[in-house]
Image 1: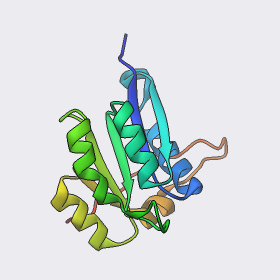
Image 2 (image 1 turned 90 degrees about the horizontal axis):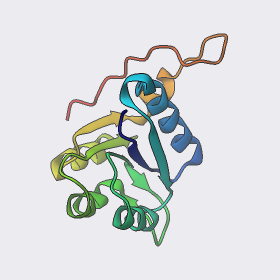
Image 3 (image 1 turned 60 degrees about the horizontal axis):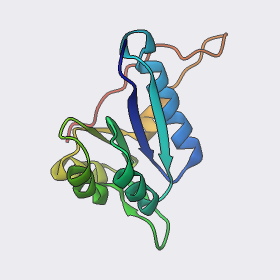
Length: 140
């Protein structure tokens, strides 16, 4: 039996949180990957709280959380992730601005994707199932 995997999605937009979750549900074929649990955080503070109490296999970070007090660039969480999570945890930046993706990669993110390409790449068939996707990573 496969182990349960955990995913933390850090994004201030509920729509973008749902989009990322939907893409992961589609791309992580549960028949071969096992089941997984998705946790959401809308602020850096919420993300830090989640990171302090849960071990995640995959963490996606928005490029910028615009909240005045609890916001900032998502890559600011990477040191917290490196301190609290397993070295095998995968960090993915999902950014609208290339500079945020570059900073994320410099600080230790494993992958970076352009948020607008993700949104444009989502296609449903007539049964409202996601079509196969080919999403290019940012070359940073």
